[in-house]
Image (tube, rainbow, N blue to C red; front, top):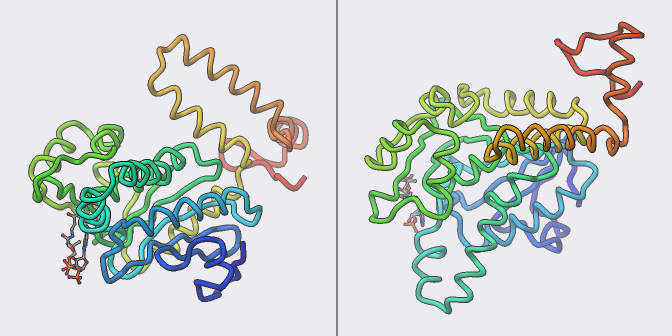
Length: 290
Ligand code: COA
């Protein structure tokens, strides 16, 4: 994958790779800034975004220059959710198998792959965030919003339920009272409210959004990538396990992680704390370069 700081996308290479029209990618200092790019349509998720995002995830997964993936939107929207015309009306009128393929590909990028994506992911919510965009938001490991971003479960306002996997996603991160309120009223809430409800990790003024997101990405870059991957995978799996099964799984996963970790982080971490006394794990990461 190409991608130099400040480079204007899409490049010829992007187009050859399978994106550049509906999704832009900039790789800078280990961070892939992935931008949904239909600002005139408030980045509503059309089939173009679906196919291009799957290609982008393939590419950033295997690109050693990428340590963290940030997903955001062009213009004043994160995403206005699924495109009512291109994602719903037109496929509804077309061959059922085509619609099925589209829905499957959409589920793949929005949550199936994202949930277990081998690299850390951050949703940077810069503006409008509706309906299907919640799947992306919640599919990402972490989320930061602009305080004045606008969120909404607008489905009820146009006569459908929050389907795809939206309602399930909401049930994972929102309290029952909050989820039911917004599902049933279709009212909007701000980024600041989203942070209070823990739909996002934090909300910051719009002017600080990118810098704060970069700071978070830089923190993740310091961590052992192999262990990060195991940690997030384990979290998602144990959520639905009974306690005893979870204990067995976590101990096995921990052993697997230790022995398959190419840098044997546990050994370095213990040595630097217990023998070298060069750092305190309660307060920072071990030095991966020693
Ligand atoms: N699907 C299809 N097109 C959409 C869209 C969506 N989800 N969201 C926005 N658009 C299109 C509009 O049709 C319009 O297209 P046009 O210029 O060809 O007429 C364009 O994007 C701009 O939308 P507009 O409503 O004029 O922008 P706005 O800034 O005044 O309002 C929103 C922004 C997001 C509040 C408004 O567009 C909206 O309510 N969108 C639908 C949100 C929704 O219900 N999403 C859930 C889908 S599951």
